[in-house]
Length: 292
Image (cartoon, rainbow, N blue to C red; front, side, top):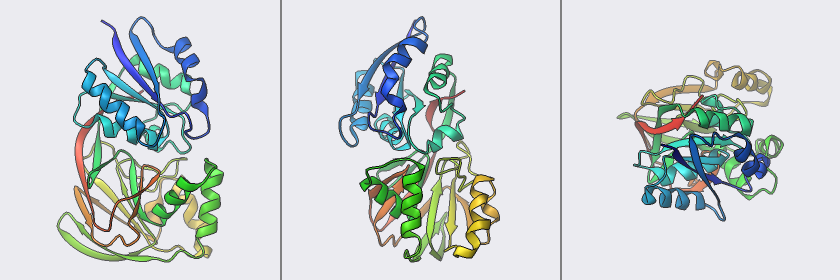
């Protein structure tokens, strides 16, 4: 019996790899094993609506997000509580979750992963009433995501331009956190709450994070002086960011932040206005994913 797959395509995601997706599917998918339908998103969070409709219809075995981490988040948000499997064809800028899962960044090879239909179970993080599949962040991280949301350009150069422009003037904030019942207060440049190990582009902000350990990796980063950047920045790419003197790590099942004054959060690469109080909770092995 054939499996039925829904592909949800973000037509404006990332750097445009998704524009030839129907041709790639026609030529690469195993038609003897899989039937498929392709739908395109038309507005913000339309992917959530399409995924929710697919769950309600009850005729699909998997939903594949064709886009970046934000597109994946949208699709997963509509699949919450279902037994459907998630597939990813990474066509975004950073593709953090796909990189962590070792899903090929070439669409044709990513479709071959779907053909093989191997399933793994990974965690998700719930933030208030939202789902985080890869990573969330507050402080400077959220500022960059918010500015990217308003920017016309995408990609690594656009991120770098915003970081270099805002870095000199952005001030640290004092955050109060409850980490598995322990209250702490820290002055931080940004704080990441990680399920996946990276932002994207192979920048491993939480190199010890595992997608199936039932824990959130909390990475608290104080302001890094310009003179220290040449030593600290490479640690992101070498999977040793935890060695920086400007980084403090915790692992936790549950975290609450009480004073996110700017109210913005980076959720899987997208800037979202959430609120001043943030409650993060890891839901272990709550998502089935197609993996290599």
